[in-house]
Amino acid sequence: MRQGEISLVGVLALFSIYLMWKSTELSIGYISGQGPGGGFWPFWLALGMLLSCVASAWKWWRAQSPAARSEEPFLDDFGWRTLLHIGGSVVAFVALISIVSMYGAMAIFLFYYLRFLGCHSWFLTFIMSILLPIGMFFLFEGLMQISIPQGLPFTQPVFDLLYDIIY
Image (cartoon, rainbow, N blue to C red):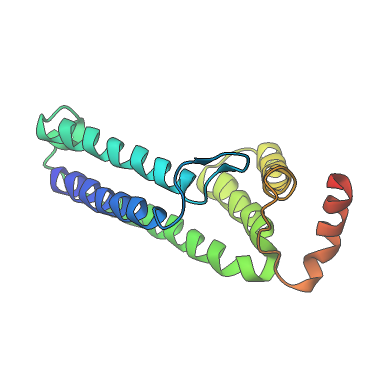
């Protein structure tokens, strides 16, 4: 467990540094009259992730967390099964984006995750699986004016209805 924790922190720190470096290809500051530059959010979120990695590494070095003191295996059988269920559902989510749109894939992922992995009630599962993707649609398409992949043509009537609400 101890080795797994610091290994993951190291990988995430390297990924954070890469994202910070890559986001500097665009403006990471605030552009007067336009708002934040294209690299603003990726840079500052990656910096936050890097600082979290530094804090985790510090706690690991001082053996302040239970994982940092543990000599248990990183993943037991239950952990591996859970990793495969979640990893498989993320792969399915990415595969579904080009078919049913980002929002449809999000709804399916939430449904699976909440009901079958999280064992939440049917009511909560349906409400979250419907309202969260619709909220994300209004946030990205309406408020931020960022178009997200909409999948195959059979999904267009749903988007036309939502666009009528925005415009």
